[in-house]
Length: 475
Ligand SMILES: [Zn+2]
Image (cartoon, rainbow, N blue to C red; front, side):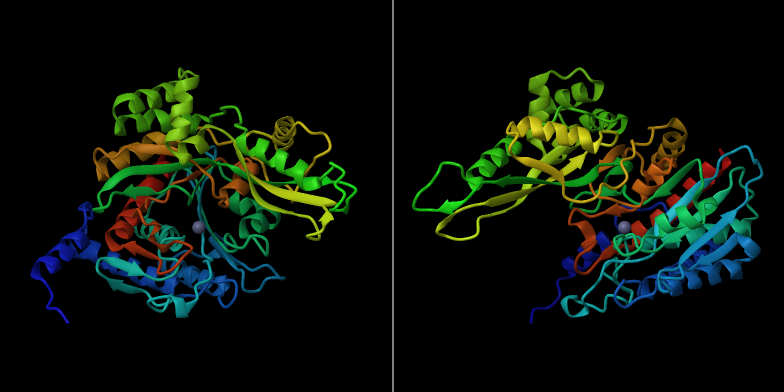
């Protein structure tokens, strides 16, 4: 066993302090509120909300109790439990605005979490542990950091007698991670549409990025999501004995089609947000890359600049266009028979606003073999256009980021994962991914093992979201 190095201890202490120095916790009142937030966050994180063994209903009731305790009542706070899903409860709450002409702002966070197999984790996934500057437990980031921050903001607004001009709505929903079973946003859109009706919504999906030493690099805002869609390519042939090949071979035909799909590049089709992403990212590079990024962002890039950007980073390519790649292949039925059937799955991530049917047509053009069937592998989900990159959204946000993290650029992006934002956008509620959480390069164990968040990052996200909601509600 080696003795601890004082240098190591000093470095750990330094790292755990991190680059965050924006917390205004110096006076007792602020510290008391921070303690209360920590206890609320602990209670929420330690309430198991997995599909297999947890209860969103219990979590929603516990958060509702916090709001009642703060003085909310009547119809302003409700726990909505779907009759067929007694453990998939959702919390809805509101602060009525003083100006009925202004559309509401909706704060959305999901309270269910991804399964966590305790035997694989270093610690109990449902016990919040603070160690080495991090909070460790399932849901510490996704999405209970936001959910707890929103409830905390509601409590503080009540204490302060804050009267927003816009109605502020809160929805803590269940089933974001397992929407094939149940999804709280879809349920509320159908059964309690007024709970979600809003001029715009703040949701998960956009995070800040930290460098290897924990310093903020950029502040991400998610503006739209790519649409997930699988297609099936199918080839059939008569088959027969493999000793007497006929030349009509389903595997051969399918293989040729798969090669062509793999090589195919969809035309460039940027959204306002991805154009802005390239424009704003230019300042973080130099030389030809900086010039190419700026040109792509301003719409003046030539074919070779676009090709360089697409080749430089798979994410950049994904921001430029719809992508489709073959991901699974199967075919044949015996070693000694000509195949009768072969099929491949092609997974597409479609730019918002581009139709699934148009993508199918382009795949058919790329395959260039009418004998290959191209069908949807599953029922298409919502296909919303990206929400507008609106100054009413961006200006207050940029002002707060500039104040809290001077010099850190706000960078809009498109998400290739799917959040509940796709349901809201499809319902006509422009939804923006603004978590205020800065994440480490390693992904913080989100959806994986040993999920964790820097304590300072959590407290900053809480401070940021409080200010953001106040700014949006005032507008
Ligand atoms: Zn999430």
